[in-house]
Image 1 (spheres, rainbow, N blue to C red):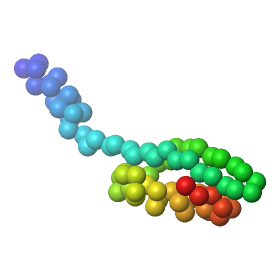
Image 2 (image 1 turned 135 degrees about the horizontal axis):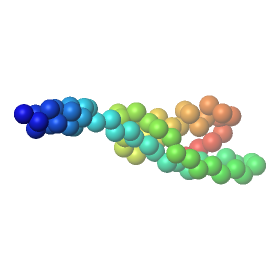
Image 3 (image 1 turned 135 degrees about the vertical axis):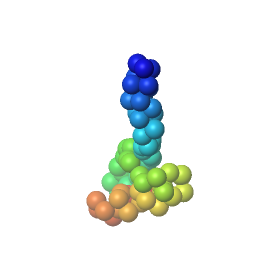
Image 4 (image 1 turned 180 degrees about the vertical axis):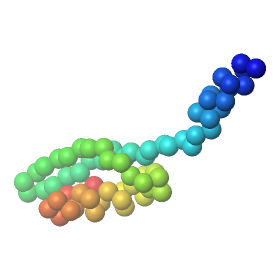
Amino acid sequence: MRLPLIALPLLLALSAPASAQCYADYKAKQDNPLRLAYGVSEVPDSACNPKSAKKELAPRLKAGDGSFSM
């Protein structure tokens, strides 16, 4: 009778949905004066590939002063 009581919490813990987060690292450059930036940013799961991540990050980088490019 002990086994089912121990197995139930383990089963519930293993059945919880997995939450994977997606991060993209980026390099950005500004000319005149030259500034280089490197960072890591969280992107939505729908943008968890290089092409989509670039589309997602470009507006964020331009929001500061509009002159960074990837």
